[in-house]
Length: 157
Image 1: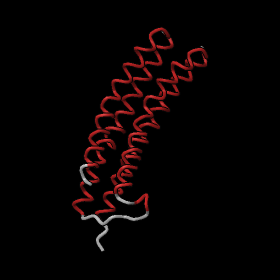
Image 2: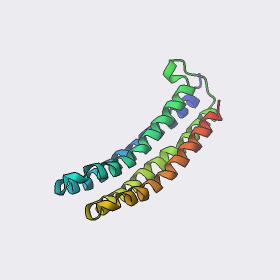
Image 3: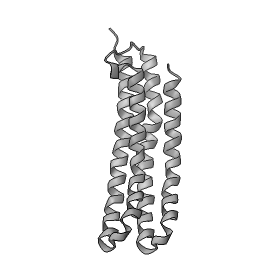
Image 4: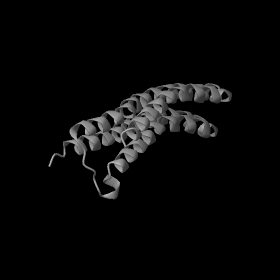
């Protein structure tokens, strides 16, 4: 039996969760390090820097959502794997790539922006909304990648 199609499709789903998750973990960690310094000096700024720290974590959620959607369509979560040709498996793999790749990089770049935002909050806490807005702008590209991955996966039904 030819299992290459399903293996390729599952690998795509795993990459979506794995790469975006790694990017988010790295991003949340980077921002947390910067935030910890600010909070050690002024604990009242905790809530403002926490929002900035949370932002790079969303890409991991987007990758997880994409993986669950793919694995559900593939029947893996029901324990009834569907049969896929190599070409169809390759299509699933390709459908997962946008959020896998963009999720990884956008989480890291969002974290870099969030770290800069933590610096803004440290010096000018009244400007935290601007810091959050700047970091949230990077999120746009992760959302677009998620949309493309979801549309591509749903188009494979």
